[in-house]
Every structure is written in structure tokens, then in C-alpha cells.
Length: 459
Image 1: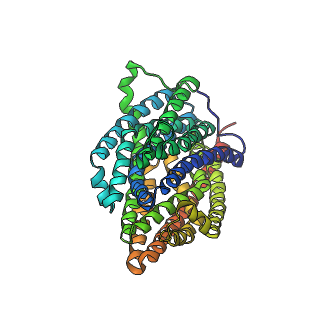
Image 2 (image 1 turned 45 degrees about the vertical axis):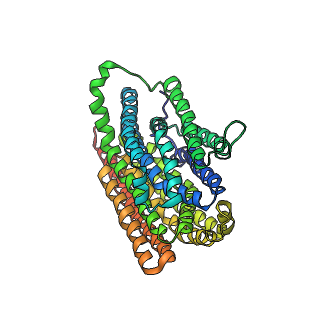
Image 3 (image 1 turned 90 degrees about the horizontal axis):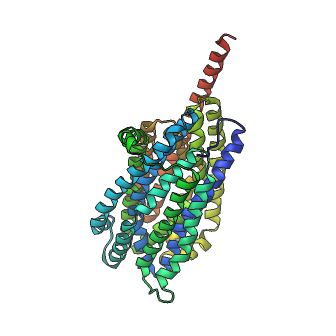
């Protein structure tokens, strides 16, 4: 396996080399979602509302995969940093087995309970039927989401964020090609509407799966099946689940809270649901650089923590926090200034546009501080400290975000719902910044202790 030593060299340069490709990869994933949303919006408001309704459900499977990926990155990067590279191949292969097994259970349960889930989110009538049809196809191919995500997590742990970015970009390009063909028809392929959007998603992910498996097997030599190593599956799964289990659980809080928020929006009509779904996707797209900083530093944290380079961990946290605040300010300014033209890209419905414009200048205020949360939670997981990361996420999502949205909705209707959601996000960002500063201080103190201990050693 080709790995990059992140325990040496310039910290800002290493961070930039990790974050840049990560940002490109996330851009491709978000573009994937935005392309879907745009093409579906051409089918009408009901279809756009149905797509918004599916978003929390789709995020559940993605959250499980992301949680396991966080666990894999943490375990593998610390193993590499500690100089135990022989374990990486076994851990990677057996983590893929775990991911396939878990997503299989989630997908089967979801497929048989699609309508129940959508009704719980406030879906009804034509919107519910469209969303249910989409999700049945999506669940059937959900396995194509998990395996590539876990495989790319293993490659990132080794310090390579460029390859995952290329793979994610390939998925976005494939989706952009397949969407209009399957949604509106082309040649012998009939127009399939929402079903076509689902087929395009599954098809593009399947292409990515093949590419990812080829890279893992041929280039990285990370896939190896050995009967004698089956006895080590409990050890491999246990180490990954120690981090990935809590991460997956807390990641589930995000789509569940989004589902709760979608239900609140549904109380104001289909136009509000459509605007809330489209606004969320635009907002996440603008947040990409900030999110990339939080995720991109995980391999750096893991390798240096495993190598006990506390000085480098403290330094990278300082740079990451400053970068995230600057990028968040730029993100908010962009969305607030260009909210009107951005809104017209996703809807021409006169009932949706004013709501979407309100969303885009209120909620993104939180972008200025929210990076602190991404940095703190990813750092804690990368260090192998899942419980504080879990507590931080649970405080952010169901408590601050969900509670703020509910109180705002009760006090000020739809506009109050937007302001309450923004207030919850700002509060969670401030908690994240304080947590990051606390981690920086701890690592700086540990670095001083290491330096004193080194001086005390006999020559």
C-alpha cells in the first residue's frame, strides 16, 4: 500500500494538500445532489417536494456508511502512525465485510417500510407516492453507496485524498449524464420521471463501486481474503465499531433531525417543503470548503496522534479553525448576496421563490462559526475518543438545532422556524469552537511534557 507520512514536514502545506482534494470530492458529491434536485425540479413542485421528502431517509444509509468510514479512518491512520502497517490490509478488508452486512439490514428494513417512514415525515398524496417510488429503487441499490465510501476512507487514512476525490468526481459526472437520459428519456429509453432520477443515482454509484474496488485491489493491494484471518474479524470489527458505531449513531441524528425539521416545514405547505429541501442542498454546497477542512484533517490528526506528535496536532487545529471561520464568512456573504438568482435555478414557482430567498439569507449566518463543530468532532474521532464526539453531536443536532427550530416555529411561524434553526446552528458552532480551543490547549500541554521528558533522558 502506498502511504504518505503526515508526521513530518510543513503543517499548513500538509493540511492544504489534504483539504484541497477533499473539497473537490465533496464538491462532486454535492453537485451530484444539486444536479438531481435541478432535473427533478423541472418535473414540477410536487416532484421537488417529493425529492425533499426523501432526503432525510437517504441520509440515514449515508450516515451509517459515513460513521463506519470515520471509524476506519481513525483506526487505520493511527495504526499507520504507530508503525504497524501490516494490519492495514486486514482491517480494510474486514471493514468492508462489516459495511456490506450492516447496510444490507438497513436497506431491507427501509425498503419494506418506505411509506411508513414518509408519512412520519409529513408526506401525503401525490408527493408521498412519488417519494416512495424513488426510495424503493434507491434502497435496492444502497449497497453501491457504502463499499466505495469505506474503501475511500482507507485510502484517505494513508494520506491520499486525491484518489477519493477523483472517484467521487467520476460519480458526479456519471450522474449528470444519466439523469436527463432516465428522467426525460432518450432514444429507446422511456421517460421515467422520479424513478429515472433514482436509477441514475444507483447507476452512477455502481460505476463508482467498480472503480473503487479496482483501485483497492490492484493499485493499493488492500483487499485480501484469508480463511485463517476470519478468526480476527471480531477484533477488526470491534476496533472499527468502537469509533464507527457511535459515529454512525450520532450521524443518524442528523437525518432524523432533518426529518423532524421537514415535518415542521410541511406544516406550512408543499411550497415550504420544496424551498426547505432546495435551500438545504444549496447551503451544503456553499459549506463544502468548511466541511472539507473538518474532514480533511482527520488523517493528519490520526497519524500524528498515533506517533505522539502533539505539537503538530495543536498546530493543525489552530490553522483549521482560522481557515474555517474565514471560509464560513465567505460562504454566508455569497449566499446572502446572490440568493435571488440562486433561487430561480431550482424553482420558478412564485410560491416557492420568496420562501427560498428567505432561507438563503437567514440560515447561512451559522456558516461563520459552524466549522468549529466539524473540526472538534472529527478530531475527537480521529484521536479514538468517540464518546466526547458523540456527546458533542447529540448536543448539536437534536438539542440545539431541533430545539431551536421548534421554538422558533412556535413563536414566529415559518420565518421564526428559519431564525430558530439558525440560532441552534450558531450555538452548536460556538460550542465546537470552544471544544477545539480546549483540544488545542491539551495538545500543547502534552507537547511541552514530551519536550521536558526528552530533555530529562540521559544522553
